[in-house]
Amino acid sequence: MARGGSAQTARGGPVSAVEHRYEVRSREVRYRGRIFEVVTEEVSMPGGGTAARDLVRHVGAVAVVALDDAGQVVLIRQYRQPVGRRLWELPAGLTDVTGEDPATTAMRELAEEVDLTAGRLDVLVDLHSSPGFTDELVRVFLARDLGDVPAEQRHDRHDEEADLQIVRIDLDEAVGMVLAGEITNASCVAGLLAAARARDAGWSVLRRPDTPLPG
Image (cartoon, rainbow, N blue to C red; front, side, top):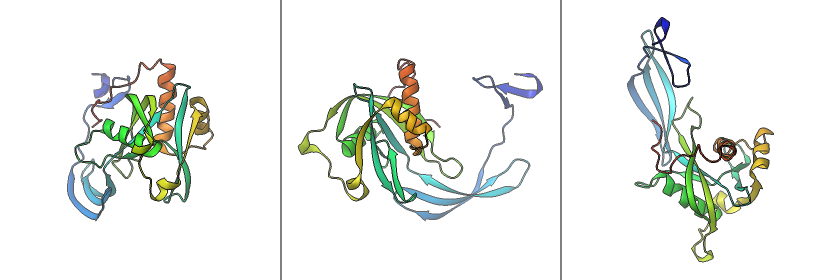
């Protein structure tokens, strides 16, 4: 215990010895859909009293940095209605299939969106996409030893997915696009930066595909 009643984290920074426990006193569902629900929760605050917080409860998602033997990553360019334009993204999808683990979801999305298989899958990074209003957790995997899905087994794409573009870009060039503001999708930004860092570390920082999700 450090002086002044504060503890030290694993990274050496001070934390409070006694943390307030935020308790949900009431909860009202405003909207419930297939992917998310919108709720208002009344939460206890430090020093007494409560505050209402509107938030989105989300099923979660996975994304995949698919890296080929030439050091290129597979990116897709897809239209997104909330922002009204096409974005550079990773192959990705919701963890909305009951009983399906994130690694299996990642392999399925890789096949469905970009017609690829992977002989090796590792965890790159986990991120809360926007914790100020949603609990959405995205696990980003690194896929290597890539192969092609046989033509007769390929997924029929519909709606926005029918219009997506698939490209391969050198990993360092993709990182440059991130830093230039050309790639803004959160999981894509995090995944590409993490992949470059992991590569530079000789892949020693990767985690097993069955690593438990945080929290």
